[in-house]
Amino acid sequence: MAIEAVPRAAAGSPSGPDTHGLERVLELMAHDHLETAPAGQIGTAMELMVMHAEFPCLGAKSVFRRESATHLVLDDIDDPSTPQTLLEHLADFAERTSDSEDFRSFMVTFRGPVPASEADFEAALYRVLQGMHDSDDERWAPGVAADPADPHFAFSAGGHAYFVVGMHPAASRVARRAPLPTLVFNPHDQFERLREDGRFEGLRETIRRRDTDLQGSVNPMAADHGDASEALQYSGRQHDPGWQPPLDIHDG
Image 1 (spheres, helix red, strand yellow):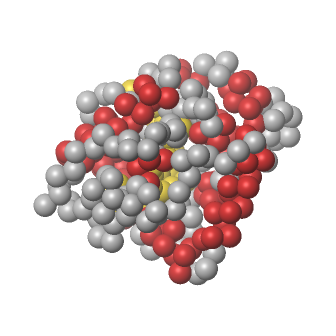
Image 2: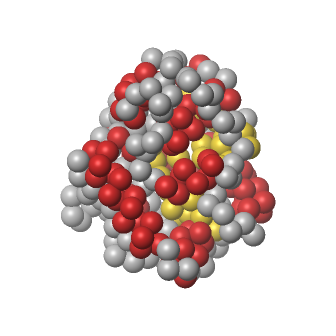
């Protein structure tokens, strides 16, 4: 089920942003049995998280504020049909939003399985991305590298480049601690447009400062495109130097 323009969260919700800190909101959500909830309730929970005053990513807030999030809810991240389903929905997303100058994101939330650790979630994330690549008939997106170890790498789906953000309840970073496993596909072109407009650096520094305010330190995996492979950031798990993203890219 796809949810367009995720409905606004109700004011005064018991786990709403005006009542508790972000970590407490996420703890309360963990007891809401969202894995069996209707898709609309899952969408509202995600919005409550992102629109919380302490949530650091201003780009994500803009997506919800402008109702430019496309949100898909699926049952099982490990279902064999998941990669093809995501390719089809991303193709529709790209066609509908390619001319938009607003922040926009494609989000998919899975009812399960809920990972027990960051390593479990990372393995599931890369199984999905590998399956999407294996099923993708389009050439790699222009302007970004296809080698996951390359500092200019970005994930390609349907010929479009995306920065992937993984979120799940077991994440060590609070900003990645979504109530259910979630993948966010952010089109790369919107970041390039920010750079061209001279707004990227200021936005990046504000987000990193807000993340430090939330957790006491900046995300150790944070890096700019061109300095290190962005695949290091996809799952939210901290990696030692020399770690290689488990993606087998066969472009061409």
